[in-house]
Amino acid sequence: MTVKSNRISARGPNLAAVPPWGPADARSAGLFSDEERARLAVLATIVRLQKGRTIYREGQNADAVFVIITGVVKTYKATAAGGHHIAAFLYPDDVFGLSEAGKYTNSAQALTLVTTYRLPISALKPLLSRDSDIEFHVICKLCHELREAQRHAFVISRRRALSKVAMFLQMIERHENFSVSGTDEIYLPMSRSDIGEYLALSLEAVSRSFSKLAALGLIAMRDKRHVKILDRVQFDKVI
Amino acid sequence: MTVKSNRISARGPNLAAVPPWGPADARSAGLFSDEERARLAVLATIVRLQKGRTIYREGQNADAVFVIITGVVKTYKATAAGGHHIAAFLYPDDVFGLSEAGKYTNSAQALTLVTTYRLPISALKPLLSRDSDIEFHVICKLCHELREAQRHAFVISRRRALSKVAMFLQMIERHENFSVSGTDEIYLPMSRSDIGEYLALSLEAVSRSFSKLAALGLIAMRDKRHVKILDRVQFDKVI
DNA sequence: CGTTTAATTGAGGAAAGTCAAGTGAAGTGG
DNA sequence: CCACTTCACTTGACTTTCCTCAATTAAACG
Image (tube, rainbow over all chains, first blue to last red):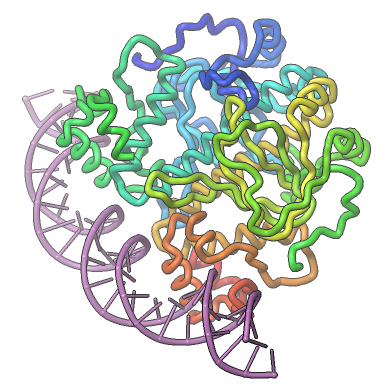
């Protein structure tokens, strides 16, 4: 499997984020201490999910949040026209299971084989109200996800499909560089259709954009799911 | 002034949000108790900002967060092409001043005359690490803003301009119903151009959409900034 | 190895963007 | 108080871009 974490995952849930007020090194880091992870681990059960498996559906009672250990998850909403809009792709050390008034606001599905910690809300709430340090780190993570959601909206708002796809590759690259190391190749665990639903483009437009980026010599595609940015300078100009 | 809050604002900062795990009444509520507001008030200074005033710029050192007492604020990012993308419109009891690695991620500007609490990060961090209740409510607010940002992306992803504008009116209406009461008229404190930059539409497309909604008899425009939804059933079908 | 699903590529049409002209309201100064 | 300026908005004509539909190719799976 291409997406993996090199951590020892038995220690307990962790959250990766660029701290909002932290040092200016702008690098994503694990927020929780070993001690904090251990306290969270007591509440958590480890859940393994097959690729393609739906984890929960929009509107369902939200009784737990999830923290990814390995794999990639997408969260999405159904549209009135029968389509889908993908809200986010979640990677190891990301949290998902956002709710409003006790109901999940999105549906969630595993894009790869996924391992997660499952944290019941009923157990999490009392822990949070006792443990100020954990709470603070949750705040940092939420700030991170908020920025990420704003970035998503920013990317969608671009007019040209080529810009959207290029910015998308940058986002994924940044996300993967924090967890996977060693290679400059970007792995795409999602389909062209998923990318389209994330970027508000038809899957054909996504495909054409990849082809065009390749034709321009800006990227190389080993296969449909492995992309490498060849000319960083020119690539950044597309955006 | 059309946008105002009926609260006594001397009590201290407050945050409005639909609680993620709260009761299923799905109504926005003030999160802080009077006691909590008082504790925050000690750190805060009240700042008054003229309409059009830039509060901070993207990339500037983030030394404070702001909580709105009265008025409306927009946060935005400059685009490579020299335009702007508006990330959010913020109303009373909303927080803004989101940062990454110590730098503001957006610029912020007052759309009306604005009164805010200014909370220095340096004072806020120690308070948060001591006060678990306030911290929990901050988490609730961040969840709320995260959902709002995801909703924004969802709206932008619509293909037809008419849908985008209709959904935008719904969002503003929901936001205003929580603070202003009594009237079913929607007040728009932002320009057509602002709406365009929020929805990823040209201002002409926004204008045309308003005209079309009016021509279809779905809305009535007392003037450019006061809209009323006439036929709710048909209006919802546009979306 | 054949079947099914995902991805690419092409042609035509719909939608919004851009450019440009015109309208209207608000504020300014004589 | 009224002409004048200015800015925001509207409306129209034309262009660009992407969506839709369709055919083809490539890859994954049993």
